[in-house]
Image: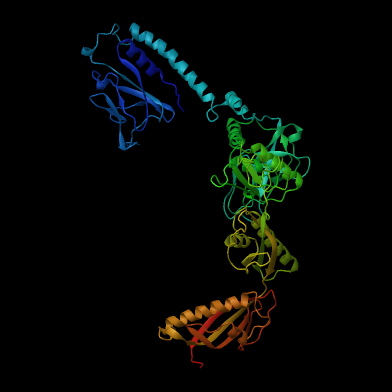
Length: 604
């Protein structure tokens, strides 16, 4: 803010000083590295120097030796602790604003003034007070006029006129209001912010679009939050029935659904200044064109397109004047045509936008070299680019351990369905160019009610793709988004514990190392290798001593010369004392290498 009303006392000081021979309102423009010198530097009285200006948008009177100092030659210095850094406790004028200096001159250096009586009650002082009062009132009125021209400071009727410049008007009681509940099926793992201005529409005709009027947070550990909304049009056309507001225009990560428990109604109070100001600010943010942000923002107003589904790329050196736009969303022909129209209306003038929408270009294609016949810049816009697809297929094999071992068939089906829905929703949240994060999927599945433990194998569900594993999947090609095409969820059944004993012989350098250290490392390695064997996809139908021993080929440090084990069926509470009993577990049963004992014996 570059204008602030000055108080009555400043005007009095200026008038009285000016009438009685003082120098008043000598103006300087403040810059961090500026140099300032008084106009009458040879005969000024330093003790009478008074300066004022604007600090943080408000009038401020500066204090000598605290904010500034003056040399004998009339040079002004703003006190600093380092170059361009104010000293602690010092105030500097706002950069680019004017500050003013008032001071007296030495009597011997100038002729005596005509008026000299500055005392209260004198004619000079009385006239100055009267004029100063009018000036102060006018200054305050000018400040109000100045503030009325800005969205952040205007109020009441002035605010309505500023908001009207961007097509926004105050909502009255003719706008239907209500509440929309944003929800998820499981407790939120963290706070989820729902901003004001979020648009929600009805899923079936007649179409009604409403907007949240407050910003609220779905708190960690809860599953829903209720937020007030208002329709965007007046009258009955803005009324939505109960349970109809189900389409969130820009999906919010962590929010799975929306609905209005009650129908929209007419009532409440007129929109407040703060609410009107917030809507106008959001309109300003989205009304701009000719930028990548404007292109993406305009596309996300179309149902079915999220901001994560759009990628805009520009290369000023290789392809000047061209923007490549990739939209990774499943759109029907009419929606794709509408998206192309939005791109054309939002793109910068003179910029060619190449997109992958399946619509014919509005203007003929340019020559194959990308320019005119004379080598000039291309003149057509909206031409679709060739694309190998907007998604890359993802497959998931998941093993779920239920928290309860007594689930019936129906309960198992519900648990499997909940895990499947969670994984599908998690993959659907990934946008164009975003990798599928293994640990994120595990965390979401673990949050499902009834899941005790969870493991998954992630892979590309495409011919010739690499094997599955516990790793992240990067998008290939880069301008694609993940699409879950194969999902296999298995529930683990009863837990079968194996206690293994093994005789080993140390090999190589390990034979010369400390025995205790080598055997401890050997025990851990055997446990890890057997765990992978009994839980992996290649587990044999029957588990016996020979199959376990075959899963432990010799390493550079040791070889297993003999192996035995005992079995305990934990859910049944049955422990089999006889060694090496062959077991044939059901596909749902889970094998667990509970313990490994290692002893050194030479089996050669």
